[in-house]
Image (cartoon, rainbow, N blue to C red; front, side, top):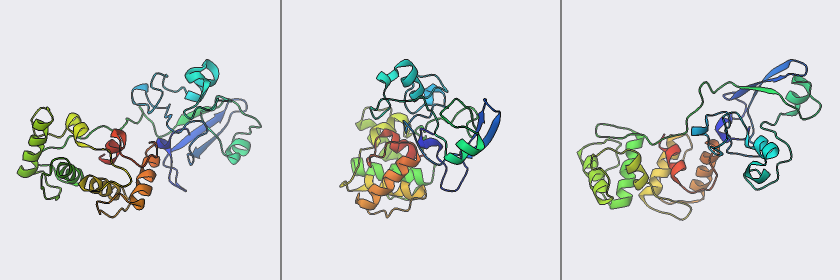
Length: 254
């Protein structure tokens, strides 16, 4: 499939599709184990409003199909390559030859079994006084990084964290309510990448570990952190840049 958002882990079938060949009525259920063929951020099975890319295309229409048939994006995929066929899914040989009895490219019916009403893109969580846990730790790390708040990073949103949030909001012209919502998150998260140091890097390393990508929390954005962040981005259908933009932070804190 052309998006890492629907990629099953090796040997698993978390994301599977039901495929049917209308030419002979053969059907097969197959897991999604690879990304491609044309794009890597085209989760076209989702509603346009939460689609990763190509949000002006209707739900269910792959960018490759639109490029090939309608000259959408100048007939190019996300990498600037000329789209040579309208493939929105690439089939493994066993599924292609044996399961569906196909001998050439063709139109098939695809049912995305994980979708339901579609998988929304990550949004900023709401974090406020009384909350506990890993996301609170991230808020505390970032407050320490952005305004030297001197908070103990304990995952407990208590009075000291509340005061630090309000101080940050006031300094950045935000509503001073002590609640870390979308506007506060957007002002709070910095761009960090290889070579960065400090508490913002610790926030990234802590979140990677919380997402089962064990990363030493050293405050130094080293080669291990770079590799792990790229793996996380790929697994979440994001460009594997090794740096933290808003979309990567949203995925990290969810």
